[in-house]
Amino acid sequence: MYSASNISFRVRDKVILQNIHLNIEPGTFTAIVGPNGAGKSTLLKVMTQEHTHYLGDVTINGKAARSFTPRELSWVRAVLPQITTVQFTFSVEQIVMLGRHGHHSTKKENADILEEVMELTGIGAFRGRNFLTLSGGEQQRVQLARVLAQVWEETVYPRYILLDEPTSSLDIAQQQLIFSLAKKVCERNIGVMAIIHDLNQAVQFADHLYFLRNGNIVASGDAQQVFTKSNIEETFCCRVNVYLDPCNNCPYIIPERTASHLAINK
Ligand SMILES: Nc1ncnc2c1ncn2[C@@H]1O[C@H](COP(=O)(O)OP(=O)(O)OP(=O)(O)O)[C@@H](O)[C@H]1O
Image 1 (cartoon, helix red, strand yellow):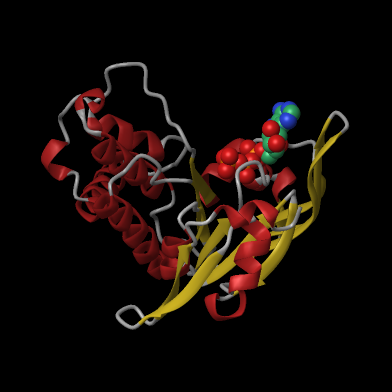
Image 2: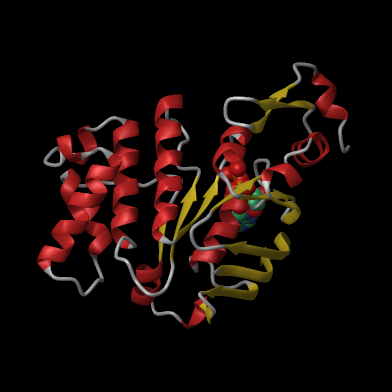
């Protein structure tokens, strides 16, 4: 399990996270939702050890995250940030292979992993292309393949991937594809944590959801437990109606068009 216990984080006198408890179970999909500025990306950066001056404990498979070397961290968790900038002319294959950096694998093992993740993410057709010439959706699938390559090997310990809004700027089909792929890799005993803005997507894919507001977890549980009108309205200050989608057998929301949300929680 990947756990955050009693995490608080501040920048100068500004409190950004307060007493956060969060678990990512291996083989499951955990979604973090919350309004802009709630602290979601900061929480992800604390989990990944990009931010280290936090209070509380982050543990990965029972071991303090602070005690991992950067290389050890790279074996156990991979991160897809909101924006990944590539400045140089890398081929698609080269980008995916960056995920194998730091591993002690043979050339053959790396080549096999490359093939598997490229096939899963459907990027084989442009393996030799300059990454910068790909569309936004194609680039994001390549970046996902890189992240998967990093934690693909079956190991005795569970691995994790952490995704920060992986589908912003993608069309609806590409969004569904990215989340479907992330959900599928849970089958390899990989725990997935994703920051998701689209609540309907979060509830469709997540086994467990955390609602974050003003640096606090205000609700957590499975969809049935937390995806309620009151939780959503209080967290997002927006009036919504919750319905049941008979196709996916999961709830979905439609926000109200009125400006009455401005009066919520003020
Ligand atoms: N280095 C910093 N200095 C000051 N304030 C910061 C710093 N980093 C983050 N913050 C503030 O902390 C709050 C949480 O930021 P964070 O990026 O974690 O929010 P978020 O929930 O990911 O937002 P969004 O959905 O808009 O991406 C914001 O108010 C942000 O301005």
